[in-house]
Image 1 (cartoon, helix red, strand yellow):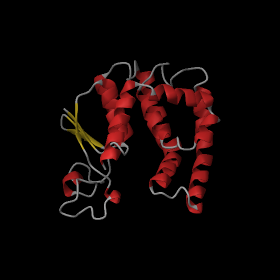
Image 2: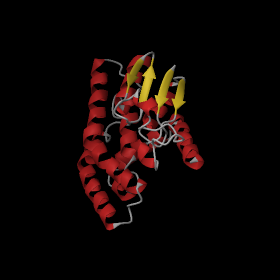
Image 3: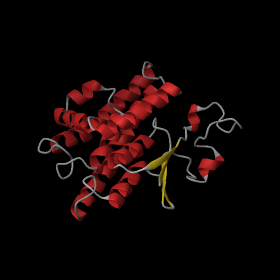
Image 4: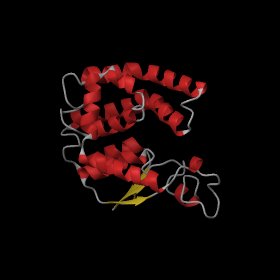
Length: 221
């Protein structure tokens, strides 16, 4: 059985959504970020990214990680590409060309979008969004997002989804990276095709189930 290490309030959300989307049975092992704990190495600390037990899974001390039939992978977007390739179906590439496109869009999301979008979500997570320094970080990140989001918006003028005109792992990976910037609603108003695409992605039942797990996790914290 697939095992997903990580909490929903992390990049592990991508892998939980993917497993839900594909109907893959999985076991969830909650691993919290060490930065959220006063003393992550305390004897009574919950399993976290500095826990020796988790470091045997991912020595880099990052979440998520997955374990599947003895294979351990620890890059969230690559994890999803692997699951799509293994299990097939409409979320995976129909041929080598589509697989190439899905990989390209995923790497594009990681290199062109996430460096900016993650700065936004971390500013809010650290309650710095109302400080001058925090606002400066957000402004810079929004500026960095304008070119890639404009490119995606143009691509979506002629198609409902990024590859093959159907929802695939590429859409899931992109949507999860872009979700980090959704607090900046004015930015999304500039790109209506992208905004509509994101709404379609987020209307999927599997996304809603993933978010329900995330909301429960926050409520229980």
